[in-house]
Image (cartoon, rainbow, N blue to C red; front, side):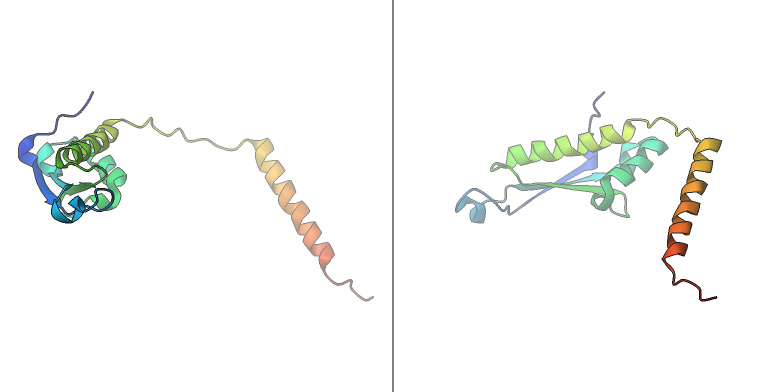
Length: 133
């Protein structure tokens, strides 16, 4: 299931890009910065929480997701790349994580850990200077 991005939640700006393109880089603004209003998307609470984690610094406190694409030479290709990235992030946020099953170490594992700790303690104790009787 791929998320469909409503046009009224998107704001596009084009910036001067870096990278390949020769003198064209200095003349044409080809990098695309996409701003998406996350609150207007109406995501489920679990998807919104997960999107905040996945997006990290791309998400502002005001609920905007900012993605910049500048890897292509053309404006249209960068626009498509930015939209693809936003949709990929939202799709990842909608994937439900399986619930974590709490586990408990077995008695044998606990015993082994304690025995190892005692062994290390003995090794360290034997490193000290011998007592003079």
